[in-house]
Length: 314
Image (cartoon, rainbow, N blue to C red):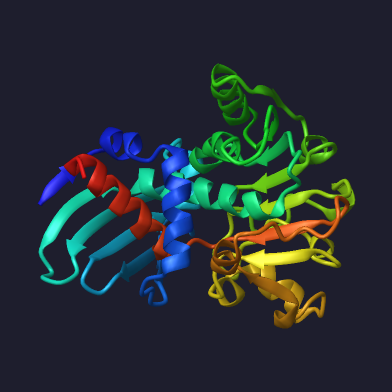
C-alpha cells in the first residue's frame, strides 16, 4: 500500500481537473451508503468530537473509505478543527492501494463542489465573492470559483480577524483584490457570490444583507445542530442541494422546513441533476439562488481516483 502525503495529494488536485472529475462522477454515479456519524464527548471540557465514516465505491473499480474527526473546540487550542484520512482499495479484490492525505482531499473537493454548484447557479458575470469563514476550506474557495466565474474581488470575514487577515494575504499573492471586512454584513453587502464555510450553530448571514441576484453558497454546516443562514435566506430562493442526504442531515434545511419556510418539494434538485442536465438554472439576473452542501463520499472517491491516477502516471 502506498502512502501519498499531503503535498503529493494537493499537487494532483488542481481545481480545473478536479472540477471535471467531480462533474463526471456526478453524471456517472457510484454507490454511496449513508455516512456513519458518531459523537465522542470530552467530560473534562464539555466539548465533543464528531466522527464521520464515509465509504463509496464503483463495482469493479475503486473503493474508498474516509474517516473524519471534527473538533470545533480546537480553535481555542490553535489546532485545526478537522482531521481526516483516506484509504483507497481495488473494489474487485479488496486489495489496499493507497493511504492519502484526507485533509487535502476533503478541503479541495469541498471547495471544488462549491465552485461546481456556482458554475450552474451563479450569475455568469459574478466577480465579487464574499467569504464568511477563513479556515482551510474557505481559503480555497476563491481560487476554485475563479475556474468557473470571473472572480476578482474577495471580501473576507471571520470571528478571528487574524485568520481573515492571513487568508487575505494569501489571496493577494494569488492575484485577487482581497480585503478583511469588519463584519459579516459588510462582507456580503455588494457580493455576487456569498460562501459560508464555518462551523457555526447560529446564522452568520441574514437575507436582508444580500443584494438581488446573489448566489448563496452554504458549505460549512453538516449536522442538524449547525446552521449558517437565517430562515429568510431560503424564502423565495431557488434551492439546490449537493445530495438528498442534506435534507436529513443539515440544520440549515431542517429548521426552516420545520417552520414551514419551504418544503422538500421546493428543492429544485441535486448537484447530480445540475451536472447531468449541463445547463445554468437561473431564470433571471435578480433571482437569488442557494446551494446547500453537506459533502458526499462520491466527491472524495472522485478526488482519490484523480490522485491515484496522477501518482501512477495514468
